[in-house]
Image 1 (cartoon, rainbow, N blue to C red):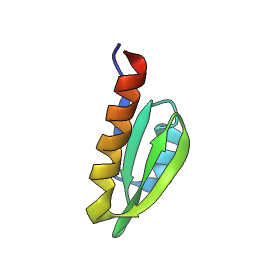
Image 2 (tube, rainbow, N blue to C red; image 1 turned 180 degrees about the vertical axis):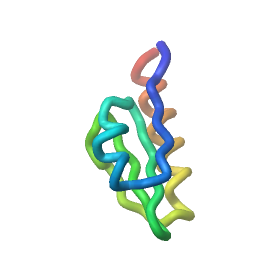
Image 3 (tube, helix red, strand yellow; image 1 turned 30 degrees about the vertical axis):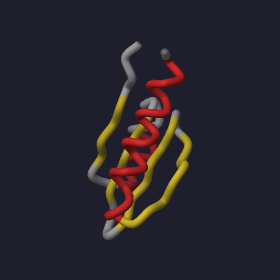
Length: 65
């Protein structure tokens, strides 16, 4: 089953624009957000952000099987 992913360059806009995505990532200054189905699940430094995003995508993909 396909997933709806969102990659945003702004945390402010992501709160509204990415809320319908299954998993979203949004960058800010030095940190960012990972969101799952519209809820912020992590606020992390940039160096940890992509790993958490991928973790959430993989977790959701397993759930959809």
